[in-house]
Structures are given as C-alpha cells and as structure tokens.
Length: 330
Image (cartoon, rainbow, N blue to C red):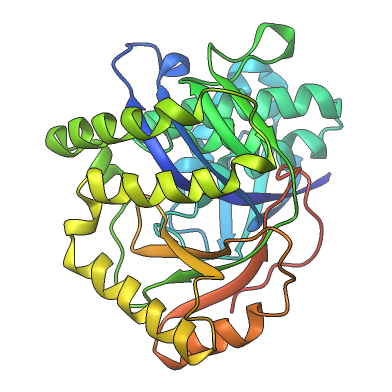
C-alpha cells in the first residue's frame, strides 16, 4: 500500500504566542501569514508488520514522524498492523521559519492515511488534529498547522487547533483570503535558529506577545480581504521592530543584503518589499502592489544567490494541503 502527500510551508509575518493552556489543542498563537506552494512531499509504503517506521530522504530527524504515527494509532489501532517506509523530500530548508515541521507532520499523517484508503475529508481532519498535537509536543508550531488548514493569506483570530469535523480540533479560529501572489523566499545558507529557541525563552515570548497583540489590533477590525494587503505589509514591518527581532544583527545584515540584491535587480523603488519570516534567519520578498506580475522572480533570485544567499521562487497557495508536482530545492 502506498500513499503520497504534498503540503506547503507557511511564513508567519505577525504573531502573538498564546501557550498558557495545559491542553495542547488550546495552545497556539494569534497572527497573520502566508501559505506557500512549496513545502514537503512525503511518500509512504505500508507492509504488514508491527508499526516500525523507517525514514529516508532529507528529513532533519525522525521524532516528528514517529509521534505522528503514534497519534494516528491512538485514533485507529489498525495503523499499528503495518510497517511504514517513509521518504521525505523538502522543497525548502528546515529550521528557517518556513513552517516545514508543520508541513511534514501534516504530510506524514495524510500519506499514511491515504495508503490505507481513509476517506479524504476524515484524513484531512485527523491530519490537522494530529499535526497540531505533535508540533506542540515538540515545542514548535504554535500557528503553522492552523494557518495551513486555512490556506492563502490568513489571519489567526484565536489560538489553538482549528475546529474540525467529527469532534476533532480545538478552539482555534482562522480566516483567509486567497490570491496566487508571487514571492521569493530567502535564507542564510550558513546558520539557522530553531523556532523552539525563541518560543521557550520567557523574555522573547513576552516581547513577541505584546508586539503581536499591538499590531494585530487593527487587522482584526473589518473585512479580511485583498484590500488589507498594504496594511498587512505595514503592520508586519512594525511587528519586526516592536518585537525586538530586528535587534538581531544577523537579521539586519540579511535585510541589507536583500536591499542590495533588489537594487541590483532594478527594484530599489519600493515595488518589492522584504519581510522577515518569524522565526528563522530568513525573509520573504513580496510585491507591494498585488497587480504586479511574476516576471521579477528569477532576476531577484539570481541577485540573491550571487550574494551567497539561498533563494527560491514560490507563490501563495490557496489549498496548501493538496499541492501537486515534484519536489525541488534551489
């Protein structure tokens, strides 16, 4: 039996950590961000056995996938009647703020269920429920799973796993609007700061929460649609400053390099803007005007790579849980 899932990553632009609850499904964040059409592809093969999981490919570790299988078995013990060989293909680098652990957890849960022919709607609900729990058990996530469930350009109104059919999920509330916005993701190729390093730091948590709540206050008012794009760009820049994330010299250097690359590509006029991806040493370049075509992506990516940075063209994904195509990593 075989199953496959291709799930996009996610970029958080603004967030307020909300993890005070003792219940994993109630932990999460308020915030805003973008779902991506690049993420993780997982293929699984199931053979009769005793729930032995082997992982091939470029997964940064196996703990996440083992926990996903454990959580699925809690739903249905029949998953333990098979050994699972999993192949992981990442389309973007891990631990850089691209939401790949959430994407990997969802893709793992979906691919295993698809191998056993589980109804797709049920499989999706279980995958989101399981992935959220696994992310919190590993001190990660806090909002990526809920965002990917919604897709597009999301506004996370209430923390926690989103409400799901069949009594699954939690109290999370997310709204989105959908448009295929072209973008370029950028990352340092020499280092990374894992998300949990920040989430588990008490001072950072308080600073991030205060900055996030301040910047989200206005965004939560009124209709959430494409007319709010410029406001989102403005508030995400304000959040990076208020939270103290811009005080990190590495992030300042990254933004300066991106500014140089944009000038070299002929886009020093503000038509393209860079925003930090929380919480890696990475950024996303996006158009300030949604009517702008995608013709700029290749030249900007080339300029970034010439300066020693990793860069990849992508776009916002409306349905980040059901992407298609072959894995690619520039």
